Image (tube, rainbow, N blue to C red):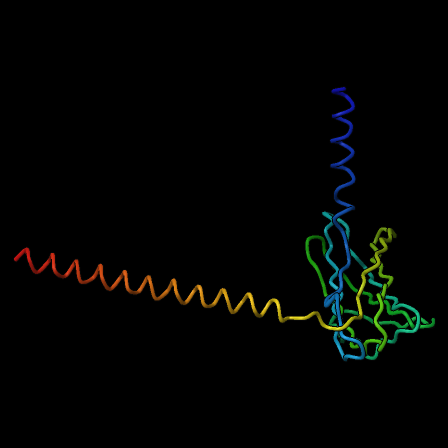
Length: 180
């Protein structure tokens, strides 16, 4: 039993660093037909390996209109449908880089799954599938109502605190004047 527990801990510690690495995209929700800039964040959570290239492949039927010009990085477009984008440069261990692209979201609501990968100098490649949801904006009426109630409560507390402070000030002044 003790040996199995020890092996489980060693396995968890061995596999944990690779589970931490990821490529994310923000915003993760966009309105249909909106012009938006998507930012792909690529952290290098390795301790000794440098990321040499990052690839972003948009989903079928989705077009990236413009890409960010990143100093120190070369951008190549792969001839595919839709075209894929490969940035070549360096992301040192313990740091991250963002890659921004300008797009027009599709008119129909749906989930968009990008294929993304990071390639290390050693030849190892890690693949990810960041997602963007195309959907109408969420209703803010409920959030606004609760914010209004919270604001009223905060105002009441502030007025009560001011009244107590003023009263305490008068009591202190009265005590001070009585001493003399």
